[in-house]
Length: 591
Image (cartoon, rainbow, N blue to C red; front, side, top):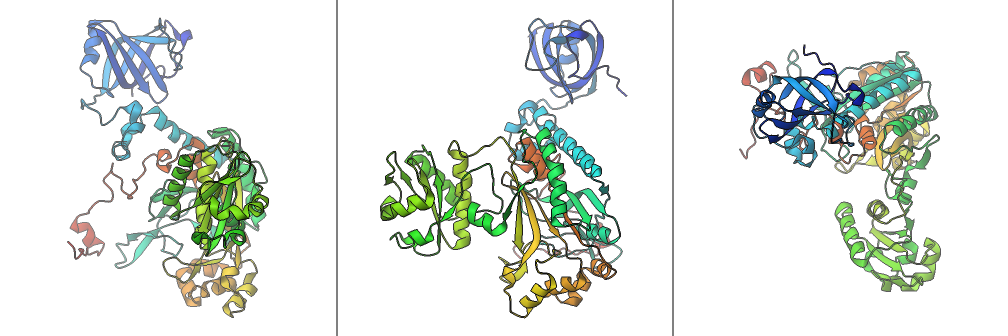
C-alpha cells in the first residue's frame, strides 16, 4: 500500500513547513532550466504544484511521460505567485524524493486529459479511463453517486424497502426488443434481460411487501438518443400496495424537489403539487407530451380562421399558431430557425409578424391580412409579435408546433426562464393506440395498467359499443424541463380485467397465462390494488448536471451504435462456446 499524508486537493497555507507525501498523476511539466521546473500533480481530489529545484529531482521527472503515476515526498511552502483559481493555489511542494508507481509508456496521449471533452466522442469512449481522469468529466460521476445515495436515503425515509430482482428472466412483450441470453442447459430456450422489473415488483406487492424500491438496471435493445442510452440504463423503480395515483404523486413530489434543488445546476425546483396536464391537452397546447414549462409559449388552434385564407398548406388538416411577443428577430434569423424546425419536425412551418404599429407583415402576411382583426383577438396580438403557423394532419401539426415552441422559446429573450427545474405530471393517457409498424391496436404505454372504467369499459369496447382508442388508463408521466423522467401507472391487479384488456390486442386468455404465468396466477390468489413509477436515474443526473447527452453522466457508456469500443463489445465468440449453447450462426446472403 502506498501511504500518503494528504491528497492533492487538501493542502493549504496553514500546512506550510510540513513534510508531506502525495500520490497522483503527473499532469504537466514546465521546464524552466536544467534544474528548475514546475510539475502539476493531480489525483481524484484536486491538483498541487510541485517545484523541481535540484538536478536529482529533475532527473527523476525528465524522462517521465505525462499521466505517469508518481509518489512525491516533499516540503510545503507558500507560493510566491499564487493561483486563486484552485484551492491549493497558495502553496507548492518542493520534492525531496519521487517514486514512479505506474509509468505511462506512451509519448503521445490520444487527447489532453484536461481538455478531453473537446476530443471526438469515439476517441473519448475508446479511452474512457483517460477521459474520466478529467476533473470536469469525473464530477458528473461523483454527482451521480451523490444523487443515488440521496435517492436511497429519501426512499428509506418513506418506509420503502430496497429489494433486488432477477436479471435473468423470461421474455415478455413490454414494448422494446429484448436482449436474449441462450440457456445452455435448456437447448433452444432463452432467458431475457429485464426491460424493467415490472412483473417482479408487482409480484412483491402480491407477496405482501407494502413499499418496494430499487436502483434497477434495465436492458432494452433500442436505438440511442441524446436522452437515452442504448443497451442498459438505471431507474429508481418503486411500487406501493393499497395505493392510488395520488399516493405515488405525493411520494415523488416530496422526494425529488429537494434533491434537484441541492444537486442541480439550478437551485430552484418545482414544489408540490406539480402541475397536472391531460395528455391530449398537452399535445394541443404544447405540441408535445413532454412540455418544457420553463417556456411560456403555447399553441392555439386557428384552423377555422385560416383554412379558407387562400394559402394552400392551410386548406387541409389543422393549423396551429404560436404567438411570440416582443420578438426582435430579423427575417433572416426567423427563416433560419424555421429551417431548423423543419429538419426536426419533418414539415415546413410559416410565419408573419406585427410591426411597431400592429400591422401584419412578412412571411405569409398577404394571405392572412383579411383575418387581421380575428387573429388579433384570437391570439391577443400586440406590436412586435411573431406568429409561427404549423399545418397538416393533426399529429403532424401538433409535432411541428411543439418543435417551434421549443426552438423559438429558447431563441427569443424573455420567453424561457432557463435556470430552474419545472416538473409536471402528464395524466389520462390513452390505454390503446394504433401501432406505427403494425397498423393494429396496441397498448399505448404499460400493458399492466388499470383502464379508467374497469372491466365494464373494456367489455363495451369488445362489443363495439366503445372505441378502444377513447379509453383512458390510470397512467402518468413525470416530465422535467421537457424531458420525460418516468412513466408509471395504477396497475391492473384483477385477472379478469387483465384478460379482457389483452383480448383487445389479439391476445387471448391462454396467451396471457402463457406469457405472464406468475403474475396471472398470483393475482388469482388475491392481489392488493397497487401503483408505481420508475424515474430514470441517468436522465435525472443528466438534467442535474446540465448536460445535453446522457453519455456524459454514465461511467462507461456505449456509443450510438450500442458498441462498447473500449472493451470491444459486442464481440465474436469461438465455436466451442456456440456449440455449448446449441447456436449456429447464419451468414447473410450478401456475404
